[in-house]
Image 1: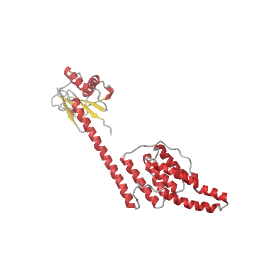
Image 2: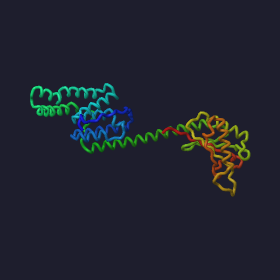
Image 3: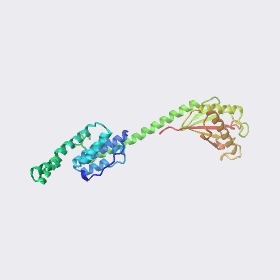
Image 4: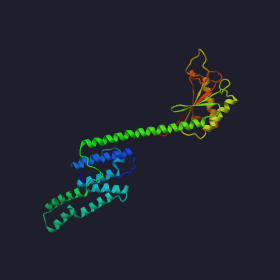
Length: 324
């Protein structure tokens, strides 16, 4: 498509992604397009510049500037002008864009159209003049719109491109590993802080890989799901520690004694009622809505203590949600 055939395009909003992985993809795109352009395949160069589905790559400053230069060398001045104006819209006073637009203005003043007008005025053969002017102009654009020196070293063989692609893959892998390590560090920090917050007299706080478990050392219920005064006080103390804690999953598991000969799994209505009663007490003390608690009956075999009285209790499992 020539410059005069190019349909108007709407310029989207600029993108400002500057993460390391994006920058590496930009470098690879510029390197591949530069290699194609230096080999004389300007069509391939444009395909490389437009290949990515990521606007942060295709609208990147270096990619847009190189796209303008390739259009200019193809003689597609309107496309080149559009790219450089887009670059100026997003990066005011960009020197490369200003220089490119200045060259277009100079070219139009003394390019083929101007030569044709002068030839007609002077009565010279117009076609010959246009051809000559076009040949000179193409050479001038080739010199004036050199591929950017920071495109940056010539990439002229497939091995160099392969190395660049390998570098991008390696950087993406390392970035994922760094993100995973950072997430693990945040989780560890959140769990350690939670242990300090919820530890109260009469409780045993156990830190697990992803959660903190609060085990009450004495039974909280007399019979059924009726709290003792001491049990209510214990839950109130833990609930107060939960006040203001955000991004926290709170699960309350009710227990009953592991009776010999009785089923060891499946839970029971009594343990579920204990979990609901404890959740209500924790809600009242913490100000956290009751709907913010998950309640369940623990398996009988998971009773935390060896005595029936101590197993008239609940376990509170706290799981912090950290940003990924």
